[in-house]
Amino acid sequence: MPRLGWDNGRTSILNNTVFWNFGDILSLDGFSFDTGFSTGCAFYATPGEMLRVDMKDIKNVYQQDFAKPFPGDEKPVPKGPTPFWGIGTSNIEEVSPGIGVGYIWQVHRNPNGKFVDKGNGIIRATLGEKMPIAERTGPLVTGPGAIQLGQMCILKAEGYIYTYSNGGAGGKSGLVIGRAKIAEAFNPSAHEFLKTDGSWVKGIPRLDDTSYGIPGKTYVGTGSKGIHSNGPGSIFFSNYFKKYIIFVCAYGNDINFHTSDTPYGPWSEEYRLIRNPGYAITVHPHWSPGGSHKEIYISSCHKNVITMFKVVFDF
Image (cartoon, rainbow, N blue to C red; front, side, top):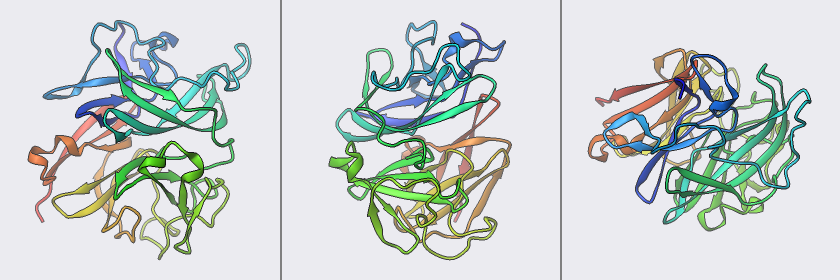
């Protein structure tokens, strides 16, 4: 197998088992379609080695995709301008023992960067013998004009699955927060979303609808209301601070965070944590010693290489 570059790595837990899921898997020794481009793989974590995945006896990641298309989805045209699938996935949250929910954003794409958006879908994740498995629960639940549901991150908290999406006029209005009761997480019509007036409204918002977003003042450094993340981020409840902490990124430059007493705000001002050329910010609270979260681990991706940071708080 060629040396692999791992894009957009996230960790999740099902049945007390930690696994990674990724975006593009590319050869660092030269471009190859046989290395997972472009719907990502998922592999189990190796106990005691944060940055090593357990690939069992898999020797080629071709067609080892984590989230496959639904059989009825519109297929890319093999010799067209965008002949390949592209399926971005959220992290996974457990809704019942060994069963998790996640969200996908589907495109048709080309290695030169051209793509055509297709819409949102929902996946049901389980633990397979060799690798985690995600199955679509049905056709796409929106068209291409919707926010990219949960692609920033998702969180199980307070009886809900919360989704965090960059949205509103191409992301200019900041983060859009949604939620559905855990028992209804696979039902797209059960999801409700927070508007800037503080109300919750059912129905997945359109990307150009700026009435959705985090209520409140203009945050320092963002230039407009709300919280921004140029790409995937991460959220968890900190046992150390007794607050929710959401990590965001300024694409290729900074890892920043905000805190809140709830999963939906109000949020603190932005704290700049690390200046780093990376994106796809993921916190891994399950690896915090003793679950105290005084020491946490955060990863980011740059040029298909994932770097792990250890952060120790002294507050």
